Image 1 (cartoon, rainbow, N blue to C red):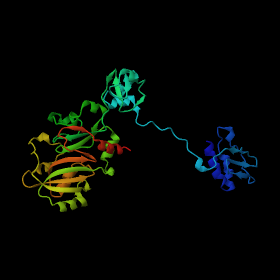
Image 2 (image 1 turned 180 degrees about the vertical axis):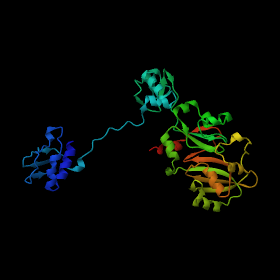
Image 3 (image 1 turned 180 degrees about the horizontal axis):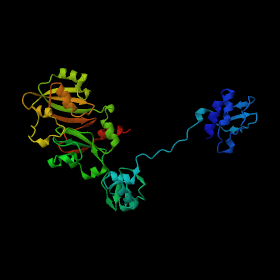
Image 4 (image 1 turned 45 degrees about the horizontal axis):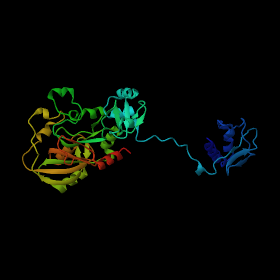
Length: 371
């Protein structure tokens, strides 16, 4: 408070006398030593102002009294704002950490922690005497700490991201719509472990029902939003098997200029075009393999005869069936599509239907999106 008042007075004293008269509007400080008190009448013009050194004072007033203010900073550069204590980074409430590990709901883990049933250690093999008893649900611990419930080691923390190689004809949702329950269509909720589902892990965006390749599962909603929002410009790389022999230079120019669709004009970066033997497998003739949004035109375009090309391209937006639509509007309908990269996370040689954790460089990139 002392520094703030000194600064304000130093500034005002450099102004014209009328500014000084306005000091009568100031409220009293809590400390009498720095009390500023004036009578209802205005301060007269016969005053002396001292603002240098370590003091600031006004004297000889007309009916008003301004008690001297001393020990102010010698310069404004010495004034420092009161620092707000920083939150401890890298620690979270124990009930949240337990919920993130799939131990139970937040209310359940609150009760578990309240019952003092949790102990913590620096490593999973720590003996009982090296473990610390958690005193309650508000206590904070590192998210990667070794935790024990009633003496039993709990699962490790859920990863920030999981990489999955989605097969064809799997819905990119955690639960299918009830009206299609009789079709027993496969979905991502059937492949993700129960522990990760309890932690709140969810797919990052979607891949079409008949599209294969890389799809990420995220633990953090904030990270999911940053991975998907167009303004972030996170690249997604695809390989599309298309009908016909594609002219690389012509197609590159068309995609760069932008291709008009019913949802707007979208561009893409073409990386390469190579000859193809066609799709790896023909679609089964089964109505339930198509999702409800697959149009008659989509199905009619599934021609597996004639020449084919593999088109590798990059997009930064994720509109519904956008890659298929822009390539079809360029004269090359897609008969098979696979996503091979999302940002710096690559599919690599991950087998179809398998999961993997992030590599170190991938995790570092993902964490950088949260900063």
